[in-house]
Length: 428
Image: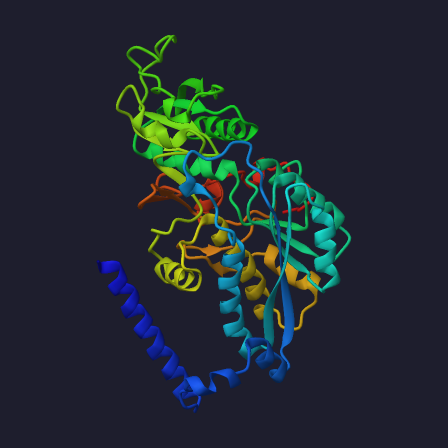
């Protein structure tokens, strides 16, 4: 009952703010009969002779190998794009004073479609900044096709660590955190709570194996132990809600030997195919974390600190749904472009690109720090939320895990640090 009232109050305040702005500008409120005469934002931009800045959004439709266990995990059609749209409203609010007007140029391709042709279509329309929601191999193909052109790509989906390491590209910035950042954030929290003995249960997909490797790396890095590793195997013709119980340390799973005692179950199931059952199918009472239970994530709609309440509220008002992580990544990508252009008015593409890569660039991304991109691999620096489906429980990096050489950059304890990087294309 409280939520509708909250939205009504917020809407009323929004109306008051709009009227105040209109009166301050010397304008009378416009009645419904005059609404049809109001200029569109593009017409206003043209009248003011603002410089147009098109931001491309290139989305490749996904074909998941395994369907998620819950239909509630189905993604909205405008995922990612909605975050860019919210960011452009903010960009244009500042742009009317700084001389710029931002627009979206969208291309969507099917799973087997020609993403490079779609990118070329964007370039033909004058786009130099492209927000990419696509798998890793598509992202690399786009980067290689554009390597000699004035184009900067923003990865808002692919979590593969190799994209920031051996397969890094100088024309890609990664807003989406990679798997090592997510695993490190989770590991710090578990170790801080003295839950250091982990049972790892993973799926059979390549993504699940990669996430499991990131978890194993994090355990070694922060002083935890994986006491045993189990694999969930899909049984043809069997419903996923019949997965049975997770291993019990006292007696083991059906037909298996018992496992050593453990503090927590860490599950690696990126498709959410079976992990939603995991917290309720354990043979022994243990917390479940990773792909279920307590999950590391870049964004959660329950996040309320550092101005996040306002961002969530604006997004919900504009798109009538909750902001998801990929939406947040799209928002950050588009705001990065707007912030860089605002700080470097009239600068050429290379200057804008270098500025975003440099330490002078700073973005408020609603997680308590001044966000930048790592010089050595193009990864967006950001704290990681540890959240359930209802609330944010904690935020990593956790206290007690100091950076060995840069005390002011605790966030670099999450993921691949500068002295570990294999990336040579970006440079530090």
